[in-house]
Length: 181
Ligand SMILES: [Zn+2]
Image (cartoon, rainbow, N blue to C red; front, side, top):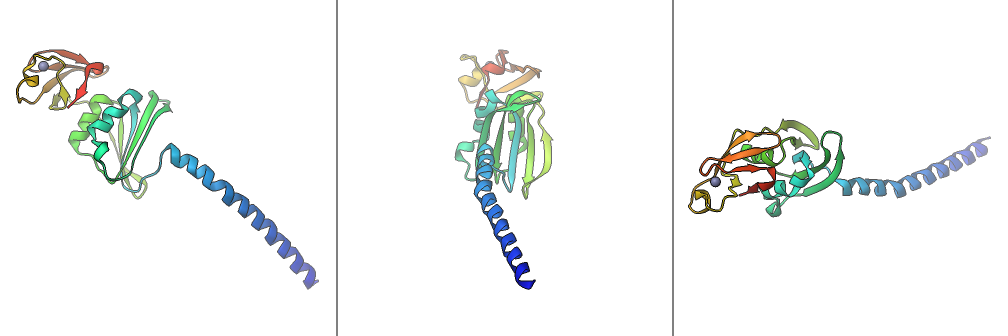
């Protein structure tokens, strides 16, 4: 009787081992796929709901080229809210209010998530400012801001779609003409 019992248990163990081995073989692949999509960060900032055409403008605003920590950029993801979107994750970086305001100009629907210990600690909805100081370049070549050392200043005439007006030359610009300084 005891012998029989022993046999059964070793058989069970073998079956278990088989399942376990299969699982190990499978799991990293799935994980790797998810990792490729966008990796989780322990500490830092995740900017979500960026319109795809503003992806690299946000990269420029945050100077991610010179960022030392992990930076993940995923674009052309499907979004129920805005159709196609981009997500940018920046490890070890918290955004300044100035950076958040700049993001609002190119990505008015963006959400900024502050990450601590892999969890969202705070969610900030960006807000387009009424006045944009020294962020956008004036598209008018004869504007004083393009010829003298004067910081640019724009008034937001309309938020969506964005329309701004230069304080100095009164040139109106839409979303397309916006060049970040
Ligand atoms: Zn101007």
